Every structure is written in structure tokens, then in C-alpha cells.
Amino acid sequence: MVDIHPALAERLTALEREFEAAEAALLDPSVLANHTLVRDHSLKRSSLFPLVRAWRALQSAQARIRESDALLKTESDEDLRDLARAERAEALQSLSDLTEEVKQRLVRSEDDAVGALILEIRAGVGGDEAALFAGDLLDMYSQFASGRSWLMESLEQVPGEQGGVRVAIMSVEGEGAWSSLGYEGGTHQVKRVPATETKGRVHTSTATVAVLPQPREVEIDLNPADVKEMITTATGPGGQNVNKVSTAVHLIHEPTGTEVRMQDTKSQSQNRQKAWKLLQARLFESQRRADEAARAAERSAMIGTGSRAEKIRTYRWKESLVMDHRLGRSFPLQPVLSGGLDSIVEALTELDVARRLESM
Image 1 (cartoon, rainbow, N blue to C red):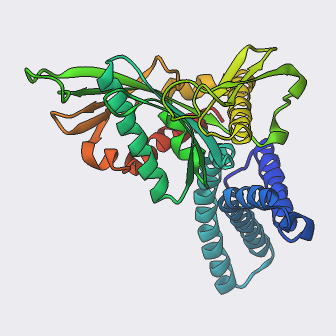
Image 2 (image 1 turned 45 degrees about the horizontal axis):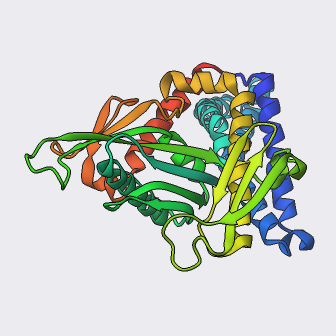
């Protein structure tokens, strides 16, 4: 019989209670009247449902094995004993399969529960070509998000002089958003002939991607008194209001020195709301990295740290291939650029799960 470690069983039981609490909350009229609470509890329930279903099936298989063992000890009728042995063998196989499924779902449960993130894309080395490539990445993620019915909202965009973007900061919300895009952090490299190249030479340019889980307000201890807020006029292109109306918001979290500037809209209140959202995400990510240093080290061994200095993927136009360096595998270029990241995400998830299971 497959044994379940007591600590593992305790963790699964606790998650089952969280699932039941989320289900109960969704029947509470006071919760149903609050859109944010409904979203949060619905996400919690949907993210835990596959794990809880497998855990309950596992417990059922254990019960069937105990019943078969009890029958084999007391029953003398050989036909009934044969049925008990067959039932036990079937339940034992189910138990083995379900134990593996539960472990895999458990190591992903925290990631699956994060339903919102901040995606930052910045042009790296390569001048105008880097900005064009950053724009390609923004289009790729936008199509990927659209295909999964996620909500993707622009927090800030700085266009490149010849097209593309120098900076794009996006808010992404939806079930599975973090567990799918969490592997995208790092340096993306492109090798292609730029449109401005007259001699047909291949240039190498880069763009960096950062993916920050977006916390709910209750998940991070952010004292407004620690934040210095300044309202200024916007800078750069943007029409008649630029440099005339004070709508840009500049936040400084004084204990850490973390700064956020937001001038994406002409509304001061909207810019303030977006600035605080981004500040929370950056502080949460810093706190998360400190609190989970051990887990981050385990993940980086196989998947990567998500550091901006780390080259994770190369997009080769001449060969029409995308090489993911963590996987050591290549994928067709055009489907990936059109938002077809599913194969890459699935492969990275398998690697991540395998590495985490080794450490359990």
C-alpha cells in the first residue's frame, strides 16, 4: 500500500478546508455583493478544485483497500475473497496514480492560486531594433492572454522612436495567468536582419521581461505613511496637457527606496490607482523573494531565477525557430510569436514540477 507522509496529508487536509471555506463564502450574501471578494473566492475555489478532487479520490481508494483487507481477514467464501482481492488490486493501482497526481498538483497549488500579475517588458541592447523586438514580445503576450480570455491592461507604455516599445508595463488578470507567465522572466534575445540594415547582416538585440505576482491589498503590509507621493506634470509626447496639467504620480517607498512613476492617463486619480497597484506588486515581489529564498534556489536550478541578466530564450529569424535555453529545445517561430506559447509553458511546467517533487 502506498503511504502518504503525515505532513503531506496534513497539508492536503488544510487545503481542503480552504476549498470548503471558499465554497461557503460564495454562498454568503455579503460576499456576493462584493465583486472583488467574489473574484478572489472564485479563484481560490477553482485553483484548489483539481487538487481537492484528487485528494478525496485518494482517500476513497485508501478506504476501499482497508475494506478489502478486513473482508479478506474474516471471509471464508472463496468467491467473495476473489472479489475482495480484485477490488484491492484496482484500488491499490488507483492509489498509486492518485498519489502522484496529488503531489504534482500540490507543488503547483500556490502558483495556480495567483490570478493577477504585473508584466514588464523593456527594450535592452540593440537600439531601435531592441524596441521593435520588445513590441513583438508585447504582441506575443497580448495574443496569448487573449486566447485564454485574460484581462490585460496597460499601466505604462513608452513607444520606440522607430516603432515598438521602449517600456511596456501591463496588468494581467485571469485563472492560470501566473502559473503560465511566471516562467517568462529574464532576457529574451533576437537574431535577425533589421529593416534598417542595408547589407543584410544579422543583428543581435535583447529585451528583458519581469513578471511580478500582483497581491491583494491584504497580502502585503504597506503603510501609506511610508510612501512619499508627488504630483507633477507629465513628460514626453502626449498632446496639449503634457507639461501643463499636473496628472503624473510619483511614489517613493522610503523604507526600501522603491520608486514608481505613472503618467499613462490624463486622469490624476487613475494614475494614482495604477501607481499604487504597481508599487504593491514590486514590494510584494521583493518580500516574496526574501521569504522564499530556499524555494527560489531550487527552482532556479532547473527553471531559472527570472533575473533580467539571464538569457532564457533566443528568437532566430533565419532558422524560423525559438530556442528555449532552459529546456534545450526549439519551437517554430511564427506560432510562438502569434501567442502559441502553450507547448513551451507545458514543457517548463513539467520540468518545474519534477524538480520540486525531488525535494519533497
